[in-house]
Image (cartoon, rainbow, N blue to C red):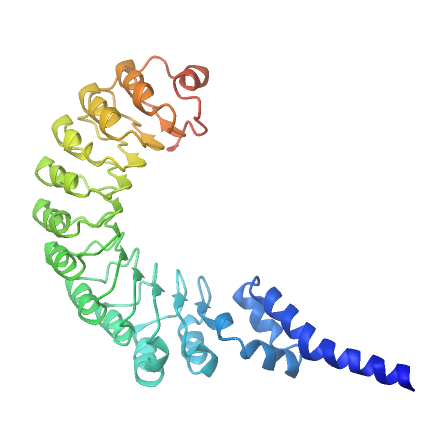
Length: 353
């Protein structure tokens, strides 16, 4: 009898202490979908998991169908009242009407949101941005890649509702103009990461406003923007904290403009693919000024020669791990072995295919 009681007590302790501890450890490593499935195993597991708020800080509906209805249903549950990260990247069936319901019925659940990913949600408009950010005073990261419905009105709604944004991705938002640049520059002086890829309506004037006022930028993506000129590019020198810069396709960038960019001494990643006006002169200033470079693409630039490689090797041989000189017909020492002699830490020889 005593043995039976001892075994029963042991099992009670196991169920009360050990199982919950193990479940918490395991559940923190599970994808959200598996975590939800785990709730259905037993009432005790459900109670145990729900009792840990840290497990319910992320809502991940990326690439899911019926994402709008799923979002509304999830935010109506008390366990998501402190959610910090919502991922709707390429989620389907999410529209402004869903966000209107979220605002009216679940707005309290947005008070702690820090990360909001709406990439590829093409049915969300400027109105939708206002609806979903209305109750997001703590939002820090906002991404709405590839949404041609977004205009300056949407950006105005964003800056009105969210004052703390430090990471902004507007890649592919082709209808934003210099008015958005002005709003960003005036509202987010502490911005650290900005992606303006293919925002083709922006001009030198708009970019200059951002570069002048957002001096904390660490990452700037200007991929596939061929209309900017040295007038704007020279202002990049103001970004003393800049580490990542993508200028792929900057057809108007000259050696003079690049020499100003070379003043960004903290640069570790620089994409100069198809910057066709660049020559050895410009690359030499980069080699001398940016001695922490780890990633550099000169793909397609016919004006650079072996002199560029020699300069880069002299100043950056101990740091560069990725170097793409494919298509640089002026460079003769382009074989893998020859590049490794100049850059012994090189691991990646091709960025573009």
